Length: 160
Image (cartoon, rainbow, N blue to C red; front, side, top):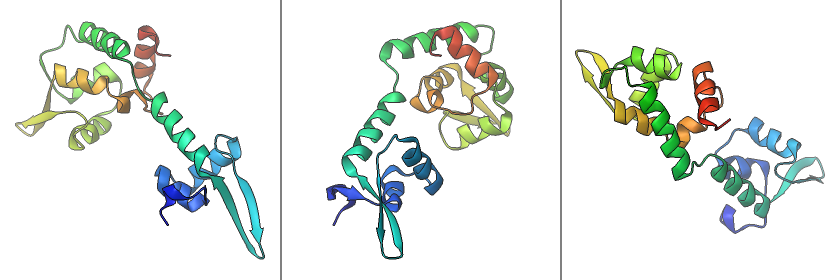
């Protein structure tokens, strides 16, 4: 039987459906964000989690990390103004100054294609517009451990 077709799932199935770790699932259950019933069958203990609660949580979680078109426009305009003094072709140091994140984080973003860039003379170069596209993505908005610059920028924009 497919997990989605069930009325109740286990904690392991919750991890698979939501693509989360065991500890994250445990925290979600204990915090009450997803309801559960703890069951005991002899020596076997397991969680009985209503699939309807899991679907509801996943929808709320997906909506939380979405930006409206107006918010995206505000972010793009803010960063265009902030990058006015920078060249059109940005290197890792420029991106570091704009976002407040370290060179290693920026390198990971570029290597994972989150930021579209090219390599010129063994150095990454990113177009301003490509960086603005990245800065308006749900990924950038939903970063949990934000840099001080990221937090300050979002406060100025009005997202925090």
